[in-house]
Amino acid sequence: METKDLILRNWQDSDAKALYEMCLDETLRKSGIDFYNSITDSRNTIQCWKNDRGFKVIADKRNDNFIGFISLGGMNRYDGYMEIEYAVAARYRNNGCAMQAVQRMLDYGFKEMNLSAIAAWVRSHNKESIKVLEKCSFTYEGRLRKHARDKSDTLCYSILREEWEGLRRLCIDIRAMNYDDIPSICRADGDESKKNIDYLKRQLDNQEKGECTALLALYNDAVAGHVFLYHKCRWGGLAGHNIPGIVDLIVFEKYRRKKIATMLLDAAENIARQHCNKIYLDVCLNSDYGPAQRFYIKRGYIPNGKGAYYEEKICETNAVCRNDDELTLCLVKEL
Ligand SMILES: CC(C)(COP(=O)(O)OP(=O)(O)OC[C@H]1O[C@@H](n2cnc3c(N)ncnc32)[C@H](O)[C@@H]1OP(=O)(O)O)[C@@H](O)C(=O)NCCC(=O)NCCS
Image (cartoon, rainbow, N blue to C red; front, side, top):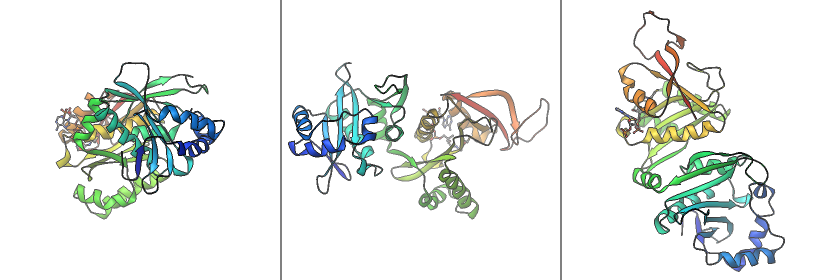
Protein backbone atom coordinates (compact mmCIF):
# COMPACT_ATOMS: atom_id res chain seq x y z
CA MET A 1 0.00 0.00 0.00
CA GLU A 2 1.29 3.44 -0.85
CA THR A 3 0.72 7.07 0.04
CA LYS A 4 2.41 10.18 -1.31
CA ASP A 5 5.59 9.60 0.73
CA LEU A 6 5.15 6.21 2.38
CA ILE A 7 4.67 2.54 1.84
CA LEU A 8 2.73 0.42 4.31
CA ARG A 9 4.11 -3.10 4.04
CA ASN A 10 4.29 -6.39 5.93
CA TRP A 11 6.80 -6.95 8.69
CA GLN A 12 10.24 -8.47 7.98
CA ASP A 13 12.89 -9.88 10.39
CA SER A 14 15.15 -7.01 9.34
CA ASP A 15 12.75 -4.52 11.01
CA ALA A 16 13.67 -5.87 14.47
CA LYS A 17 16.52 -3.42 15.16
CA ALA A 18 14.58 -0.35 14.06
CA LEU A 19 11.52 -1.43 16.09
CA TYR A 20 13.65 -1.99 19.19
CA GLU A 21 15.36 1.39 18.82
CA MET A 22 12.12 3.26 18.12
CA CYS A 23 10.47 1.88 21.25
CA LEU A 24 13.32 3.07 23.49
CA ASP A 25 11.94 6.57 23.00
CA GLU A 26 10.42 7.99 26.17
CA THR A 27 7.57 9.83 24.40
CA LEU A 28 6.42 6.61 22.75
CA ARG A 29 6.37 4.80 26.06
CA LYS A 30 4.27 7.59 27.52
CA SER A 31 1.74 7.05 24.74
CA GLY A 32 1.36 3.43 25.88
CA ILE A 33 3.42 1.62 23.21
CA ASP A 34 5.17 -1.55 24.46
CA PHE A 35 8.93 -1.71 24.46
CA TYR A 36 11.39 -4.56 24.01
CA ASN A 37 14.27 -5.80 26.14
CA SER A 38 16.47 -6.60 23.16
CA ILE A 39 16.55 -6.85 19.39
CA THR A 40 15.99 -10.62 19.78
CA ASP A 41 12.88 -9.84 21.82
CA SER A 42 11.51 -7.50 19.13
CA ARG A 43 12.41 -10.03 16.37
CA ASN A 44 10.44 -12.75 18.20
CA THR A 45 7.43 -10.46 18.47
CA ILE A 46 7.61 -9.61 14.77
CA GLN A 47 7.05 -13.31 13.91
CA CYS A 48 3.41 -13.04 15.09
CA TRP A 49 2.82 -9.88 13.05
CA LYS A 50 4.24 -11.07 9.69
CA ASN A 51 0.97 -12.60 8.53
CA ASP A 52 -1.39 -10.10 10.16
CA ARG A 53 -3.03 -8.27 7.27
CA GLY A 54 -4.09 -5.39 9.52
CA PHE A 55 -0.60 -4.72 10.93
CA LYS A 56 1.84 -2.84 8.73
CA VAL A 57 5.27 -1.25 8.87
CA ILE A 58 5.30 2.42 7.84
CA ALA A 59 8.36 2.85 5.63
CA ASP A 60 9.89 5.65 3.59
CA LYS A 61 8.87 5.20 -0.05
CA ARG A 62 12.28 6.35 -1.32
CA ASN A 63 14.54 3.96 0.63
CA ASP A 64 12.32 1.63 2.70
CA ASN A 65 13.67 3.12 5.95
CA PHE A 66 11.55 2.11 8.95
CA ILE A 67 9.39 5.05 10.09
CA GLY A 68 6.94 3.32 12.42
CA PHE A 69 3.96 1.03 12.38
CA ILE A 70 0.20 1.09 12.11
CA SER A 71 -2.40 -1.54 12.90
CA LEU A 72 -6.06 -2.36 12.80
CA GLY A 73 -6.86 -4.84 15.54
CA GLY A 74 -9.88 -6.34 17.30
CA MET A 75 -11.31 -4.72 20.41
CA ASN A 76 -13.32 -7.70 21.53
CA ARG A 77 -16.44 -6.33 19.85
CA TYR A 78 -17.87 -7.68 16.59
CA ASP A 79 -15.83 -8.48 13.46
CA GLY A 80 -16.35 -5.14 11.72
CA TYR A 81 -15.32 -3.01 14.71
CA MET A 82 -11.60 -2.43 15.03
CA GLU A 83 -9.13 -0.14 16.74
CA ILE A 84 -6.39 1.73 14.93
CA GLU A 85 -3.02 2.14 16.62
CA TYR A 86 0.09 3.75 15.23
CA ALA A 87 3.53 4.98 16.18
CA VAL A 88 6.07 7.10 14.33
CA ALA A 89 9.76 7.18 15.33
CA ALA A 90 10.80 10.49 16.92
CA ARG A 91 12.98 11.72 14.04
CA TYR A 92 10.18 11.33 11.49
CA ARG A 93 7.55 13.30 13.40
CA ASN A 94 5.95 16.58 12.29
CA ASN A 95 6.11 15.59 8.63
CA GLY A 96 2.54 14.44 8.19
CA CYS A 97 3.59 10.75 8.13
CA ALA A 98 1.06 9.65 10.74
CA MET A 99 -1.75 11.41 8.93
CA GLN A 100 -0.88 9.87 5.58
CA ALA A 101 -0.61 6.43 7.16
CA VAL A 102 -3.91 6.77 9.08
CA GLN A 103 -5.81 7.96 6.00
CA ARG A 104 -4.43 5.06 3.92
CA MET A 105 -5.27 2.58 6.68
CA LEU A 106 -8.83 3.93 6.91
CA ASP A 107 -9.24 3.33 3.17
CA TYR A 108 -7.85 -0.19 3.61
CA GLY A 109 -10.00 -0.94 6.67
CA PHE A 110 -13.26 0.23 5.14
CA LYS A 111 -12.64 -0.88 1.55
CA GLU A 112 -10.62 -4.09 1.84
CA MET A 113 -11.53 -5.32 5.32
CA ASN A 114 -15.13 -4.16 5.02
CA LEU A 115 -15.16 -2.65 8.52
CA SER A 116 -18.15 -0.78 9.96
CA ALA A 117 -16.30 1.36 12.49
CA ILE A 118 -12.72 2.20 13.42
CA ALA A 119 -12.01 3.37 16.94
CA ALA A 120 -8.93 5.11 18.31
CA TRP A 121 -8.18 5.38 22.01
CA VAL A 122 -5.57 7.91 22.96
CA ARG A 123 -4.13 9.14 26.24
CA SER A 124 -5.38 12.62 27.07
CA HIS A 125 -1.83 14.08 27.24
CA ASN A 126 -0.96 12.80 23.76
CA LYS A 127 -1.82 16.06 21.95
CA GLU A 128 0.04 15.18 18.72
CA SER A 129 -1.93 12.00 18.23
CA ILE A 130 -5.20 13.76 19.04
CA LYS A 131 -4.42 16.28 16.31
CA VAL A 132 -3.84 13.48 13.80
CA LEU A 133 -7.19 11.89 14.64
CA GLU A 134 -9.05 15.17 14.38
CA LYS A 135 -7.43 16.02 11.07
CA CYS A 136 -8.48 12.58 9.84
CA SER A 137 -12.10 13.40 10.79
CA PHE A 138 -12.45 11.05 13.75
CA THR A 139 -15.26 12.03 16.12
CA TYR A 140 -14.59 12.49 19.80
CA GLU A 141 -16.88 10.17 21.78
CA GLY A 142 -15.89 10.65 25.38
CA ARG A 143 -13.35 10.33 28.14
CA LEU A 144 -12.57 7.27 30.25
CA ARG A 145 -11.25 8.77 33.43
CA LYS A 146 -7.92 7.41 34.78
CA HIS A 147 -8.34 4.52 32.35
CA ALA A 148 -4.80 4.41 30.92
CA ARG A 149 -2.13 2.35 32.64
CA ASP A 150 -0.30 5.55 33.60
CA LYS A 151 -3.57 6.69 35.26
CA SER A 152 -4.18 9.42 32.71
CA ASP A 153 -7.58 9.66 31.02
CA THR A 154 -8.24 7.84 27.77
CA LEU A 155 -10.00 9.83 25.04
CA CYS A 156 -12.19 7.74 22.75
CA TYR A 157 -12.49 8.64 19.09
CA SER A 158 -14.05 6.77 16.18
CA ILE A 159 -14.99 7.06 12.55
CA LEU A 160 -17.91 5.14 11.01
CA ARG A 161 -18.03 3.65 7.52
CA GLU A 162 -20.75 6.11 6.43
CA GLU A 163 -18.67 9.08 7.63
CA TRP A 164 -15.64 7.83 5.71
CA GLU A 165 -17.80 7.30 2.61
CA GLY A 166 -19.16 10.82 3.01
CA LEU A 167 -15.65 12.27 3.19
CA ARG A 168 -14.59 10.48 0.02
CA ARG A 169 -17.67 11.59 -1.81
CA LEU A 170 -17.30 15.17 -0.70
CA CYS A 171 -13.56 15.60 -1.39
CA ILE A 172 -13.45 18.15 1.41
CA ASP A 173 -10.24 18.75 3.26
CA ILE A 174 -9.95 20.86 6.39
CA ARG A 175 -6.50 22.08 7.38
CA ALA A 176 -4.75 24.88 9.24
CA MET A 177 -4.56 28.14 7.27
CA ASN A 178 -1.18 29.76 6.62
CA TYR A 179 0.07 33.05 5.16
CA ASP A 180 0.59 31.50 1.69
CA ASP A 181 -3.16 30.85 1.52
CA ILE A 182 -4.09 34.55 1.67
CA PRO A 183 -4.06 35.26 -2.11
CA SER A 184 -6.25 32.24 -2.93
CA ILE A 185 -8.68 33.04 -0.10
CA CYS A 186 -9.07 36.61 -1.37
CA ARG A 187 -9.61 35.36 -4.93
CA ALA A 188 -12.21 32.82 -3.82
CA ASP A 189 -13.94 35.51 -1.76
CA GLY A 190 -13.91 37.93 -4.69
CA ASP A 191 -12.28 40.52 -2.43
CA GLU A 192 -8.60 41.16 -3.09
CA SER A 193 -8.59 44.51 -1.30
CA LYS A 194 -5.80 45.52 1.06
CA LYS A 195 -8.36 45.62 3.85
CA ASN A 196 -9.21 41.94 3.37
CA ILE A 197 -5.55 40.93 3.05
CA ASP A 198 -4.70 42.82 6.26
CA TYR A 199 -7.67 41.26 8.03
CA LEU A 200 -6.53 37.73 7.15
CA LYS A 201 -2.93 38.58 8.11
CA ARG A 202 -4.15 39.77 11.51
CA GLN A 203 -5.99 36.50 12.09
CA LEU A 204 -2.87 34.52 11.17
CA ASP A 205 -0.74 36.70 13.45
CA ASN A 206 -3.16 35.82 16.24
CA GLN A 207 -2.78 32.16 15.30
CA GLU A 208 1.02 32.53 15.60
CA LYS A 209 0.51 34.01 19.08
CA GLY A 210 -1.56 30.94 20.02
CA GLU A 211 -4.78 32.91 20.42
CA CYS A 212 -6.73 31.17 17.69
CA THR A 213 -6.77 28.33 15.20
CA ALA A 214 -7.48 29.34 11.63
CA LEU A 215 -9.07 26.51 9.66
CA LEU A 216 -9.29 26.45 5.89
CA ALA A 217 -11.69 24.28 3.87
CA LEU A 218 -10.63 22.97 0.48
CA TYR A 219 -13.07 21.44 -1.96
CA ASN A 220 -11.29 19.37 -4.60
CA ASP A 221 -8.16 21.35 -3.62
CA ALA A 222 -9.85 24.76 -4.20
CA VAL A 223 -10.27 27.19 -1.30
CA ALA A 224 -13.93 26.97 -0.29
CA GLY A 225 -14.25 28.58 3.14
CA HIS A 226 -12.74 29.23 6.54
CA VAL A 227 -13.37 29.74 10.23
CA PHE A 228 -11.37 31.15 13.13
CA LEU A 229 -11.63 29.49 16.52
CA TYR A 230 -10.54 31.87 19.29
CA HIS A 231 -9.54 29.82 22.32
CA LYS A 232 -10.56 32.57 24.77
CA CYS A 233 -12.72 34.72 22.58
CA ARG A 234 -12.58 38.50 23.05
CA TRP A 235 -15.68 39.44 21.06
CA GLY A 236 -19.41 39.13 21.28
CA GLY A 237 -21.89 38.13 23.96
CA LEU A 238 -19.52 35.94 25.98
CA ALA A 239 -16.33 37.98 25.55
CA GLY A 240 -14.06 37.74 28.57
CA HIS A 241 -15.59 34.49 29.87
CA ASN A 242 -12.55 32.44 28.76
CA ILE A 243 -14.74 30.42 26.42
CA PRO A 244 -13.76 29.38 22.89
CA GLY A 245 -15.60 31.37 20.24
CA ILE A 246 -16.30 30.87 16.56
CA VAL A 247 -15.38 33.91 14.48
CA ASP A 248 -16.08 34.59 10.82
CA LEU A 249 -17.31 31.26 9.51
CA ILE A 250 -17.79 31.53 5.79
CA VAL A 251 -18.27 29.17 2.89
CA PHE A 252 -17.89 30.91 -0.47
CA GLU A 253 -21.07 31.00 -2.47
CA LYS A 254 -20.47 28.36 -5.12
CA TYR A 255 -19.42 25.82 -2.51
CA ARG A 256 -22.47 26.09 -0.28
CA ARG A 257 -24.80 23.19 0.70
CA LYS A 258 -21.97 20.67 0.38
CA LYS A 259 -21.47 20.20 4.14
CA ILE A 260 -18.33 22.31 4.14
CA ALA A 261 -19.48 24.49 7.06
CA THR A 262 -20.47 21.29 8.85
CA MET A 263 -16.94 19.96 8.51
CA LEU A 264 -15.35 23.28 9.48
CA LEU A 265 -17.43 23.43 12.65
CA ASP A 266 -16.84 19.72 13.41
CA ALA A 267 -13.12 20.44 13.33
CA ALA A 268 -13.39 23.66 15.36
CA GLU A 269 -15.61 22.06 18.01
CA ASN A 270 -13.24 19.10 18.31
CA ILE A 271 -10.39 21.48 19.04
CA ALA A 272 -12.46 23.61 21.45
CA ARG A 273 -13.54 20.50 23.35
CA GLN A 274 -9.96 19.95 24.43
CA HIS A 275 -10.01 23.19 26.42
CA CYS A 276 -13.60 23.78 27.45
CA ASN A 277 -17.03 22.19 27.61
CA LYS A 278 -18.70 25.16 25.90
CA ILE A 279 -18.36 27.10 22.69
CA TYR A 280 -20.15 30.26 21.51
CA LEU A 281 -20.69 32.55 18.57
CA ASP A 282 -22.70 35.60 17.58
CA VAL A 283 -25.03 35.45 14.64
CA CYS A 284 -26.64 38.44 12.95
CA LEU A 285 -30.42 38.59 13.03
CA ASN A 286 -30.98 39.88 9.50
CA SER A 287 -32.06 37.52 6.73
CA ASP A 288 -28.65 37.48 5.02
CA TYR A 289 -27.69 35.21 7.90
CA GLY A 290 -30.79 32.99 7.65
CA PRO A 291 -28.79 29.93 6.49
CA ALA A 292 -26.33 30.43 9.34
CA GLN A 293 -29.13 30.82 11.91
CA ARG A 294 -30.72 27.52 10.81
CA PHE A 295 -27.35 25.81 10.61
CA TYR A 296 -26.33 26.74 14.17
CA ILE A 297 -29.69 25.87 15.74
CA LYS A 298 -29.64 22.46 14.02
CA ARG A 299 -26.19 21.86 15.45
CA GLY A 300 -27.39 22.44 18.99
CA TYR A 301 -26.40 26.08 19.53
CA ILE A 302 -28.95 27.84 21.73
CA PRO A 303 -29.34 31.51 22.71
CA ASN A 304 -27.52 32.57 25.86
CA GLY A 305 -30.78 34.03 27.18
CA LYS A 306 -29.80 37.70 27.12
CA GLY A 307 -31.86 38.63 24.08
CA ALA A 308 -30.46 40.60 21.17
CA TYR A 309 -27.17 42.53 21.25
CA TYR A 310 -26.42 45.73 19.33
CA GLU A 311 -22.75 46.60 18.81
CA GLU A 312 -21.88 43.89 21.32
CA LYS A 313 -24.04 45.40 24.11
CA ILE A 314 -27.32 43.93 25.32
CA CYS A 315 -30.16 45.63 23.51
CA GLU A 316 -32.64 46.85 26.14
CA THR A 317 -36.34 46.02 25.79
CA ASN A 318 -38.08 48.55 23.50
CA ALA A 319 -34.76 49.98 22.29
CA VAL A 320 -34.84 51.06 18.66
CA CYS A 321 -32.02 49.82 16.45
CA ARG A 322 -31.22 49.03 12.82
CA ASN A 323 -31.44 45.47 11.61
CA ASP A 324 -27.86 45.64 10.31
CA ASP A 325 -24.89 43.34 11.00
CA GLU A 326 -24.48 44.83 14.50
CA LEU A 327 -27.77 43.33 15.68
CA THR A 328 -26.89 39.84 16.88
CA LEU A 329 -27.85 36.94 19.08
CA CYS A 330 -25.26 35.09 21.16
CA LEU A 331 -25.53 31.31 20.79
CA VAL A 332 -23.87 28.75 23.04
CA LYS A 333 -23.34 25.02 22.69
CA GLU A 334 -22.38 22.50 25.36
CA LEU A 335 -19.59 20.31 24.00
C1 LIG B 1 -23.94 29.57 6.82
C2 LIG B 1 -22.93 28.92 5.91
C3 LIG B 1 -21.55 28.98 6.56
C4 LIG B 1 -23.34 27.45 5.68
O1 LIG B 1 -22.35 26.83 4.88
P1 LIG B 1 -22.63 25.49 4.06
O2 LIG B 1 -21.31 24.85 3.77
O3 LIG B 1 -23.50 25.79 2.92
O4 LIG B 1 -23.42 24.62 5.13
P2 LIG B 1 -23.62 23.04 5.12
O5 LIG B 1 -23.66 22.53 3.73
O6 LIG B 1 -22.64 22.43 6.04
O7 LIG B 1 -25.11 22.97 5.70
C5 LIG B 1 -25.44 22.36 6.93
C6 LIG B 1 -26.90 22.62 7.26
O8 LIG B 1 -27.13 24.03 7.49
C7 LIG B 1 -28.45 24.38 7.04
N1 LIG B 1 -28.35 25.29 5.90
C8 LIG B 1 -27.24 25.66 5.24
N2 LIG B 1 -27.57 26.53 4.27
C9 LIG B 1 -28.90 26.69 4.28
C10 LIG B 1 -29.83 27.47 3.52
N3 LIG B 1 -29.41 28.23 2.50
N4 LIG B 1 -31.13 27.41 3.85
C11 LIG B 1 -31.55 26.65 4.86
N5 LIG B 1 -30.73 25.87 5.63
C12 LIG B 1 -29.41 25.90 5.35
C13 LIG B 1 -29.07 23.07 6.57
O9 LIG B 1 -29.71 22.47 7.67
C14 LIG B 1 -27.85 22.26 6.14
O10 LIG B 1 -28.05 20.85 6.16
P3 LIG B 1 -28.71 20.16 4.84
O11 LIG B 1 -27.94 20.66 3.64
O12 LIG B 1 -28.52 18.70 5.12
O13 LIG B 1 -30.15 20.60 4.82
C15 LIG B 1 -22.90 29.63 4.50
O14 LIG B 1 -24.22 29.74 4.01
C16 LIG B 1 -22.25 30.98 4.51
O15 LIG B 1 -21.05 31.10 4.39
N6 LIG B 1 -23.06 32.05 4.66
C17 LIG B 1 -22.55 33.42 4.67
C18 LIG B 1 -21.67 33.71 5.86
C19 LIG B 1 -22.37 33.45 7.16
O16 LIG B 1 -23.55 33.65 7.33
N7 LIG B 1 -21.55 33.03 8.14
C20 LIG B 1 -22.00 32.83 9.48
C21 LIG B 1 -21.61 34.01 10.28
S1 LIG B 1 -22.25 33.92 11.90
